[in-house]
Amino acid sequence: MKLNIGGITEAGQSKKNLTGSWRYQIPVIDQDKCNGCGICELFCPDSCIDINNGRAVIDDTYCKGCGICVKECSRDAIVMQPEGDG
Amino acid sequence: MSKYPVKNREIMQGSIAVAETIGALEPGVIGVYPITPQTHIVEHLARLVANGAINSRYINADSEFSAASILYGAASAGVRSYSASSSQGLLLMTEVIFNMAGTRLPGVFSAVNRSLSPPINIQVDHQDTMTLRDSGLIQIYVENIQEAVDTHVQIYRIAEDREVLLPAMVCMDGWIISHAYEPVTLWQEDAVKEFAGSYDPPFKVDPRKPLTYGALTDDDKITEFKYMVDSALCRTENKIVQAAELFREEFGNFHGDVVEKYYTDDAKIIIVAMGSVVGTIKEAVDRMRAGGKKVGLLKIRSFRPFPAAAVRELLSGAEMAIVVDRSFSASAGGILGSEIKANLYHQNGPVLFNYIAGIGGRELYPHSIMEIVQESETAFSKDCVPDGAVFFNLNEELL
Ligand code: SF4
Ligand code: SF4
Image (cartoon, rainbow over all chains, first blue to last red; front, side, top):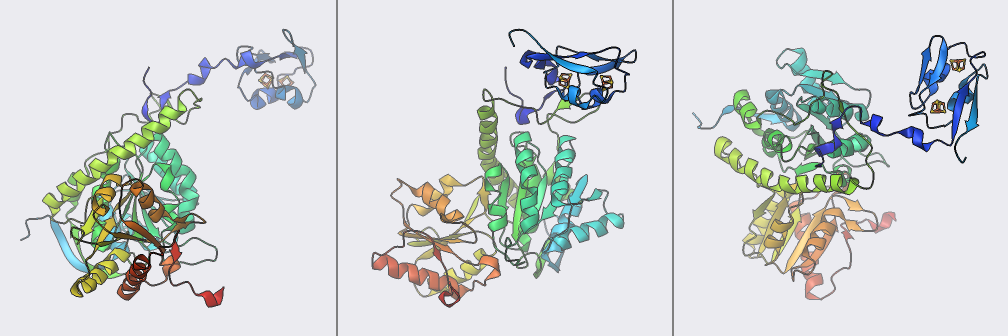
């Protein structure tokens, strides 16, 4: 592999960076409380939340487990749950 | 009829001559924010655009940071671009200029040299541009209005060369060059455009073919990216020499390539300097030569890339080298002086004197230069050469 000048690369390289591997806890959505308002979708720094059929859905390939969505949800519909060895 | 592509020759102000030259080059994008003493250049360009004389897109930015960012954007889209600034405005551009060099985007800047605040001062010294020296930016310092004009004609083909692709700055002393009136030759638009060539970078921003600029790079590749900037700037030295030679052939003027020598061949004492003071030093050299003193001048035209080989070669035969610096790195001496000194280490070269002079527009006359030479000769003969740089004409009564 040779480096391009100026660090200019094909678009979409960040997809190769699987930020889900950084996670030790995962947000879980309470489907009864969630009203699909989309606030968590806006605030997720990894853009890994989608609103699907009126409910938030998290892509665990890229969710890095930061917990921002938990803080931002005004309906307390998200909680963090430990994963793996913690 | 001149055999060269002369458009007209008239007495004009430095800023207007530079603006007319940029107008002849007609860059696609001009991104600017006014600051004294650079303002006349961008005002005149605004006039050219408003009158329909040139077709450039003229963008009034909300700061120098934005003005430089506009050049970043234009260059990444494959569009030739131009800006001008001075002093604190150049400092505000610094972050973007490092980005342009690292991303290999060749916008061109005119830097109209002015002292840095505080205290506020609008007169010339080189502290503003010298502070940008580590960015990867090409910097050429010019001596007079004609050299400013001719260097702007040369600079685009240097910066936009596929082996270079770096931002470039033509540094011209505030007031002494920007606001003075001299007889100037302006060149025909088609000749100037042909000399500059076209800008055809390997990558261009295109919504149909997205690219990532400014990606994150870890320690496994970052040294290599920095090395690539360093070697591109080193390669630039040859391009500057070639552009100067080609310009001499096609336009008939020559102001030096990376350096210019003036009576250096048999000189025992060589003065080293850049910018408008070079003209004053030439006059002082003539007067001293008339008195039988073997003195010469080495003008540094390209400060970045630094012409290390030329400096070593030209200074090696002298007994004394006297560097007149218009900027300094606090506690470490004159900036040009330090770099010349570093290049002479282990070279068995001349004894080096470094004067910090002409700060904030303090006038340097031919007799000031002769005084500097006299003082250095006395110190040399008494074997009491100062360890570091000397502030010339320091008024102790004020301290
Ligand atoms: S912020 Fe809460 S309620 Fe709104 S979509 Fe996200 S999880 Fe659902
Ligand atoms: S934990 Fe962080 S990364 Fe994961 S979904 Fe919530 S905001 Fe996004």
